[in-house]
Amino acid sequence: MPAYWLLKSEPSTFSIDDLAGSPHRTTCWEGVRNYQARNFLKAMAVGDLAFFYHSQADPPAIVGVVEVVRAAYPDHFAWRRHSVYFDEKSSKQNPRWVMVDVRLRKTFREPLPLEQLRTVNGLEEMELLRKGSRLSVQPVREREWEIVLGLSQAVR
DNA sequence: GCCAACGTTGGC
DNA sequence: GCCAACGTTGGC
Image 1 (cartoon, rainbow, N blue to C red):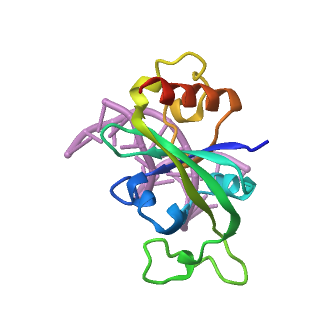
Image 2 (tube, rainbow, N blue to C red):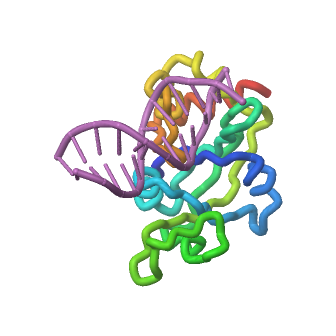
Image 3 (cartoon, helix red, strand yellow):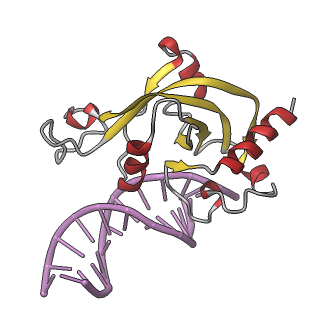
């Protein structure tokens, strides 16, 4: 059984269309710089599935599904002095941050806006919908996964 | 642009 | 270990 997750990205930085245009529709998920989010990245296994969420977007929305194709490995952007993700406290000997690789599985025909998700029965406890929730990598319960996927198919 | 809700830093 | 100050996220 795969586990389910949700990954946030600002589309102005990296959108689901950018992923669709990437080689093998695959990308490394670099730049996570929050310990709780990092620990979720470490918990991911190949074959796990994740919603792709557009934050700081108009509207903010779940826009598709990706699959984990490589488990956590050191985020080498932390070692690049000129990267926005540089962190001098992360060394090659003792990497502080990790990333996974994900491949695009599905782009929803219609995005599922945050505002709509807030009205859906069964999603009340979803991390994404918690007030003040800022986690950029978060687990999704199986039941929540099924409900959201069902919505994505209902909007055809 | 505002601001609530965090997370991090650092003095003590 | 506490907590004030500061920085960041992200909806609105």
